[in-house]
Image (tube, rainbow, N blue to C red; front, side, top):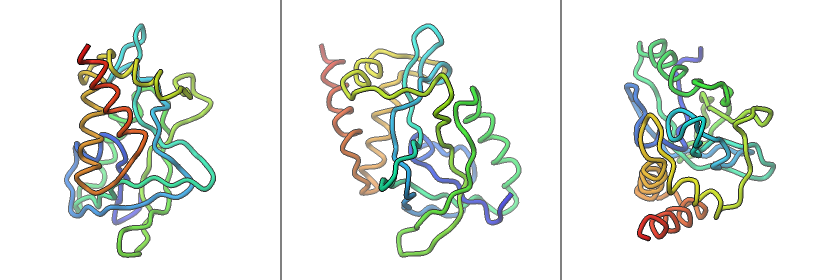
Length: 178
């Protein structure tokens, strides 16, 4: 395990890290993009009616803006165990140690959870299909749309734009208003 321990948040970790944070900084991860490319059968959907959650999907020339969290010294082991329990529930995510560029120019190596494109929960769907799924799915941690809305709102508060999330948020609000 690397010390200090940095963790990259790009979805629910942005608004619910679930571990003690000593420092947080806006950061960019190059070569990956944030995508609703993972079917959620536990947290935001079920095996019968899967939802969608965000994952880092590899893409040349892409980047993902998110939050780098530095874990409180001494809490690294407990944080890693808690993250593995939360993020590796179905083994669709892989743990990777990847370089992040922090705002201000510094670079750190951070723990990142990326999608395994060979896993059966991996999917590539058009935005409209994503919206239809997210609008109605519910899992063990609640409604799929709440996950989307919280992530989009917190990224916006941090000044991190994501055109796909903004479009999905607007579309899912419209679908739920019907």
